[in-house]
Image (cartoon, rainbow, N blue to C red; front, side):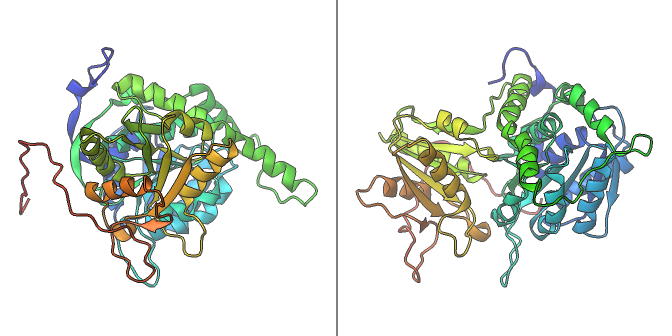
Amino acid sequence: MLSNNTNLRLKHTMPSDGNSAAAYAGYAFTETSFTYPITPSTTASELVESWAHADKRKNAMGVVPTVVMMEHEGGVAGAMHGASVTGALTSTFTSSQGLLLMLPNIFKLRYGKVPTVFHVASRSVITAMGTIECDHSDVMAIRSAGAALLSSSSNQDCHDLAAVAHASAIKGMVPFVHFFDGFRTSHQITNVDFLEYDDFKTLIDQEQLQKFRQRAFNPNHPSFRMMAIDSSFHFQADIAAGYLHTKIPDIVQESMDKVGKLTGRPLHLFDYYGHPQAESVIVVMGSTAQNIQEAVDYMNSQGKKYGVVTVRLFRPFSTKHLLQALPKSCKVVTVLDRVRETGANSQPLHSDVCTALTSIDDKRKVLGGVFGIGGRELTPSQATSVFENSLKSSPNNFFTVGINDDLTHTSLPLPKEIDMVPEGTKQCIFWDL
């Protein structure tokens, strides 16, 4: 429900896909955008190019952004780096191998005090096998680069969290990667409530923006940066530069609070949904949280006590905010990762949750599972099997769900699909649209 201080829902609600929602919000904060098309983020790049070149649409600062298509994604990242250090607010849209080609520059940007934002429609990284469908292997491949990682789980999130990413990048002066599930979120169409660009302007920290401008490379006030230093000082310099990132969780929550006041939709680094006294909770990122919420509603109506935590800010990972989201009644936490890192003892999100709880001597059982590789969806019925597994006396750990694994035998049994659609719902398929 919208709060009383806004009528934005009445002003500007329309059907939109996730790419368009992210592009609309990202454009508001962008002065220079460098792009190179790659599926499934291509339509976002096409939109910002059309808005700037054909429509001459102004951003929230009242200027028409410069949009340039480069020769490849490596050129995009290099151009973004160069534009950022000269004082421009930059952004791009990419996926999969395109994001990996930007990795060297993301490493350089992390301590550069530049508010660069990468919007990513996440897609499986092509190895010896290839698919253009979604998983989180591309985003997880760059998690050590030092950019903040912000995850959207719906089309509405794509709009809201794109604004949060840009506002937080300006306030915190670190690069952000805002990602959402390719095709599942980037291309599905739902109603989205859009803010006006005047509203976006109120989210910009003008004092921090001015400081960013003043630090820009300029021959009239030269500065010395990104120098090579020896081992006597490098360790200390790395710790000092990384201090900026310790403030990011609180900065992101502050930006979420501001967006929430404008929209009437509260946002948190970790959002909990489910029974207030849940015994079993799933922790997950991305669009699958919506499928699990459907399972939670159905199972709780049958007398169960289940819940789900949707992770918004994955990096920097905040133990404090995770604990605020987890119900104290929770006995078992099951962490689902949409990536499988070959040879790893634990997958990325599971590893962070385990470390977070262990660091405060929390004794709750933490299980880990993998789902959704290469675009395979986790159905609500399969989510129920994850909950049921968690409360067994000897639950499966480090399992897969959604497939029948007859080789390593780690998969949970495939359940019979349960019809959880509310009675009276009409479902239609439209052809030839």
